Length: 113
Image 1 (cartoon, rainbow, N blue to C red):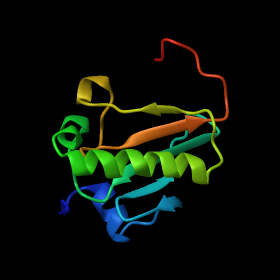
Image 2 (spheres, one colour):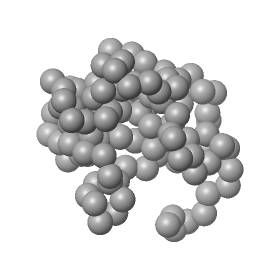
Image 3 (cartoon, rainbow, N blue to C red):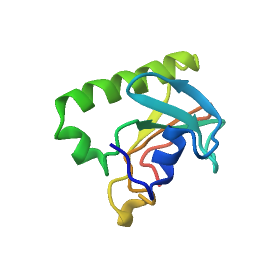
Image 4 (cartoon, rainbow, N blue to C red):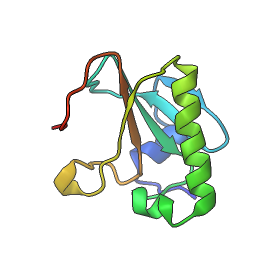
């Protein structure tokens, strides 16, 4: 199920170009257009799901999505990485299709932001 107005659904469909780094039956991972670390990729489920709570409501989606994030990290040779989800405009979600930011390649402090 796709949303015709969603930029990530358009990437999944191949209608908008992106530098893909990993793809399987459940997810597509591609380089972020505004990287915040030497490695910064977005991992999106192929199914249009608005945010992390929407993923959590579907156990099959959870399993496929988390496995896709793991496989993306493995395919990039990452052993240490940060995964960030933004849920809601007030914390930075700007595209209403859930996406994990996978960041690596530099020290990352805590707390973030």
